[in-house]
Length: 555
Image 1 (cartoon, rainbow, N blue to C red):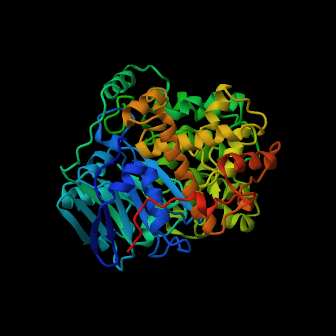
Image 2: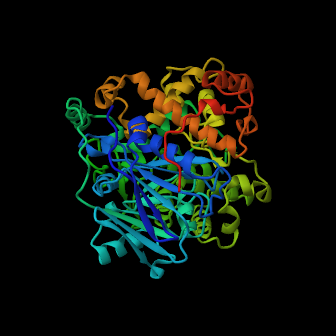
Image 3: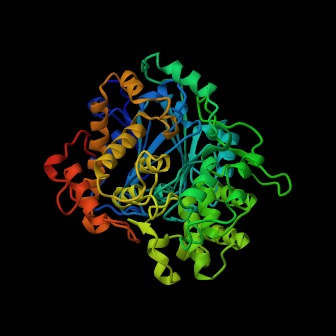
């Protein structure tokens, strides 16, 4: 079976040491990406770890497809203990980092310990350098990239970095790469901040040899280049008006289901501001959205649909330029736009200021620096909703993505059960319900399909393949690429989901954490169906006997 190659590189920023560990057996079993990172985290992060403590670890991992020149493969995975959900979280980002990462010769980077000084860590195929960078305290993400360019002749494509939000331990701080691509959900930027790691750079020409089958490598690339999909013009915002008109676009912090100004922030509005093509490494699909507003001078990449919802409809803001400004602010400060936007929307609800985009940006900046009300909001809705006097629209502490589980009941079931909370990328139920393949109404009978979608998503993040490549990187092509039958690949995904849930169970998560802040039909019975399909106990716990250790333990 095709899998990533190279050792695990453990960088202890407290001891200033770098140690390589051979993990060939783990890679052979888990392939790469999310599956390998989850296996390592399960074995090497203590179950009682403090997310902000030195015992927490952050894993950055590539899959074998990052060795290819195939479209939809310019992505990487990050995994760690989340300060937002208090459970294990994985998140992935695109951009141009992956080829520079594998060029160092490693398959996984493990960041451990805690530094007394603010650090830049430089990983090359010749070794690791620790650089104290007190001058970068409080620097934005682009300012950090500029430093790497000036002092090390490295671009933002060589770098992961945090902004002020990460340094100040905002619980939804992101890790950024290429300045505008985010390892967004779950607050891993705050984990790096707690370790006093400002940035990590990667450079080398020692990628281990990985033979990618062709076909389908070049077939996928050619088809991506020839596609006339609207997403290539409008990104994920292309569905905004359709979702608003036919399903739900959560509006004014979930008070309403439809936004009257959706046209002002939707796909056509974004496309009007798009001034050039944008892509990820080696991808001919080029669905990214470099946008510019000549009058205000704001220039950003995006906003994508989730940001349009979080800083648009959720806040009652109907001008795409305002959403662009918020998107640029979050990227620069290093924050997940979903959690940041929804948390600010909760604040606007509490002060009756929906539609006040200027106030929203002011509060967003206060969050990153934990100033004024921002210090309260920086902990997220779950921890501050009582003080604000608003409803707690979160699951497991994570703010909701745009796709409304009150209307898409299968997606609602996914939110309730996902190990990382109310995140739309954990399973693909939303696309099935938007398309009509599944009836959006009702939850009963959907559990087995949810299990399948979770497994498929977990393997997608393991390979690693972009979610938008599913029409091109088909099940049959996955079998050819990885030289394994589809059932074997899905079992890798299933094991990853089990390990995540088992880790969270050891931290006290159980059935009481699988729920929603609103009612949908037969949710309790559907959860029971899921537990049976997933092989869990009646309390939503993974039996210890169902967990197989495939990763080396920490020293």
